[in-house]
Length: 184
Ligand SMILES: [Zn+2]
Image (tube, rainbow, N blue to C red; front, side, top):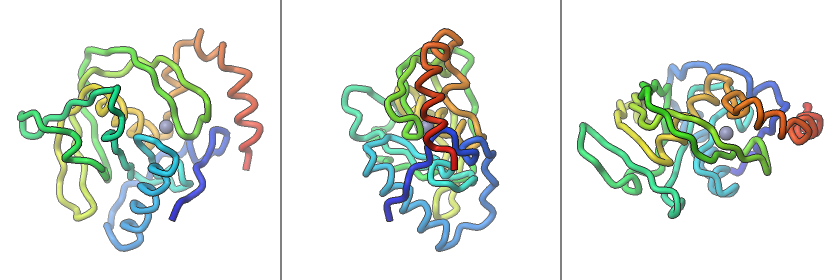
């Protein structure tokens, strides 16, 4: 079922997600709702916080982002990211490269806001899937960026926290309006 996406200003976006202890039907239903909600909003990633649940669970699908390439490695071998989408990541843990690059980002919880954000060029991910099996991969390009953006959500961190102060100043009015509209 498509859920309403929580917008900036709602405190759940600042809540650190609880670790998932049990993968049951309720969690599977939640992940299915998140995928449906993400596709409906034409997003490439969605965190549980964005539908009001502070949990370590995120869904990602970069297959339709034709103009922004992604790279993915499993066990050191490069694979086609499309063959591994959608990704459903439970309790993800990230290892970030020290090298960073800037890139454009948006967020479904911040309609009409985009900004250049610096992120690690590559990221190593350890997580569990919906069967409870470990998932381990490396990502770069758009996928690397999305994984970092979503993992931030799971810890209550938002992309505005990573904007340059000049960008934040230029968006201040927009953000204030957004927060005022979405106060629960
Ligand atoms: Zn976001």
